[in-house]
Image (cartoon, rainbow, N blue to C red; front, side, top):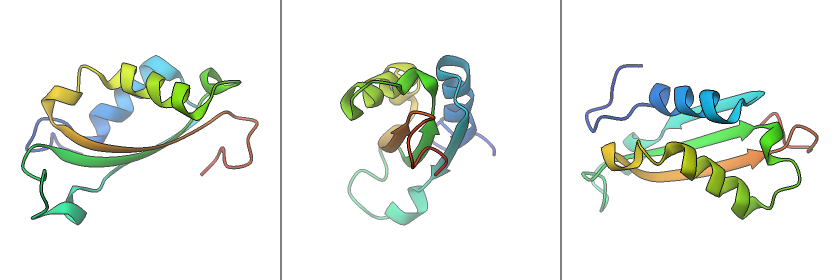
Length: 97
């Protein structure tokens, strides 16, 4: 996927998360087309992601989301407006999506 008009692509997000959280499963979707014309659509892109990582074992949902946001912090000002996260540990039932 090419770089998004706002400077961040799903590939950029995937590259950062693979490097920082070593996921066993990862899917990043650019959902921006669903938000065309909505408030905030011009400020950046909308993404959803599903990630499974051993780093999430024993952590609350909030702590998992913090790890994801911490990893993506450098990309957020470059054009991430919204991010929906599903984060699982490998031993959880929904771990593979």
